[in-house]
Image (cartoon, rainbow over all chains, first blue to last red; front, side):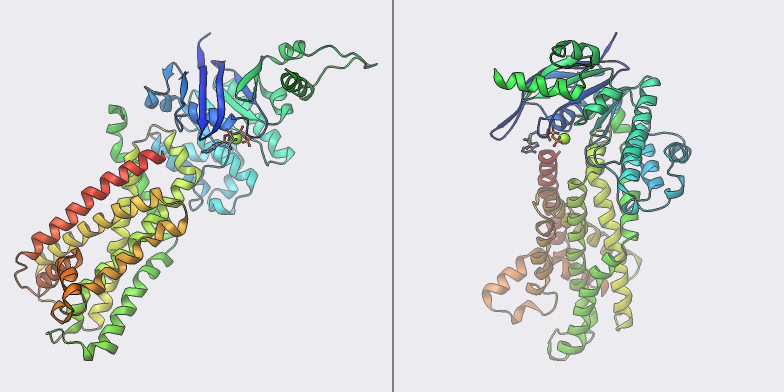
Length: 252
Length: 257
Ligand SMILES: Nc1ncnc2c1ncn2[C@@H]1O[C@H](COP(=O)(O)OP(=O)(O)OP(=O)(O)O)[C@@H](O)[C@H]1O
Ligand SMILES: [Mg+2]
């Protein structure tokens, strides 16, 4: 299968903090890939590099087959980003935000595209209100809706459900699953292990600048030592896997 | 670098960006009021309070004053461009634009054109107030067009200066504060009083700074007199400042994005 994203020995430092120390991973076309890591692990940094917002210090990365440094425009034509913090225009209404992006994607029918998305994301009633009056969940949904315009092949979602209530979170999960079902590659970052468990085809754990484990959930579970002292047989949760792997690394 | 596909969409991008920031302006009309209120207050103050004591050598002091007041309004108007650019760059929306195949300079040009339009609105408002206060001009269409052209050039030049501030400032205050000295430039020029009355050092500065030549040019055009050398000096200043500021603004933008 074709690779949607390929990252080789990626390095990035800010002043004296080395954030990425040779990160390697790949994402297959059409899969949901979850990048897991604690606060400050460098998830957003990776997303920014892959979406051409930041330049890496070393290593290479291709997105949709194009090198991010030498062909950023080709990369931009294939992707869209829903950043960690909502990227909406506060002064415009929800509808105007969508229409603006549709025009910037050079679509022929920006109004209809906007109407469709408003309907699909349950925002029709709020469509003509300024973004500044939206709740966090509504804002997030509109933010994601903006990213779907023009059907990009690869969508980056940086912590798409942080700050959402459980209901809104399930809503976003549904959207992400639908996206993947329609063939879009989804790259998402999260701190919620449950989220990765629920959504992802494959998971990579970023810790201290490197991917310390990656694979499907069953593969990750195999890396986890079988339950020793437990009386009832119990599948380890991703949370336990994460903590064990991180713990082991720290011991070395 | 940009590919041909993004180049061909350059004007679409600019149009969308212009539409966006014009909406911002029309949804906060108070900025236009803020921009026009100080110059109008100045005009009232100078005409009705100081006017009697000032020897401008003309019988209609409003006529004498108006060009300087207009420049002052533009100098304060562009601080909003700096402010809008600063907040745009800070907020996520620019990040979204930057991940899209949109021409980067179109994003800046959107702000620049918006600055032109909003300053034109302020200028028209101030001219209307001046008419009420007794401003009269015998100039025909062509001189008026020339005045509009010079004001537009002046706006463009200062807008690119504002863009540098907006793109490189660390705080909101820093972004808008740079225009204060610009607002005061008209005071040390021939905008309010003829330069002959000033002490030597001040006079040398006043006669050789951009505002004086621009003020003199506009004043001459509006009163149907030959503008002489001033118009070329004024044009040189505007174009010169614009080119230098444009280069620095683009540099600041590249560093930012
Ligand atoms: N522009 C910057 N300048 C300096 N340091 C930075 C910059 N951006 C990120 N960092 C640092 O790089 C590290 C990784 O940051 P990053 O935002 O990528 O983490 P993250 O995994 O997304 O964290 P979170 O879960 O909190 O969003 C942090 O230590 C952060 O302080
Ligand atoms: Mg982050």
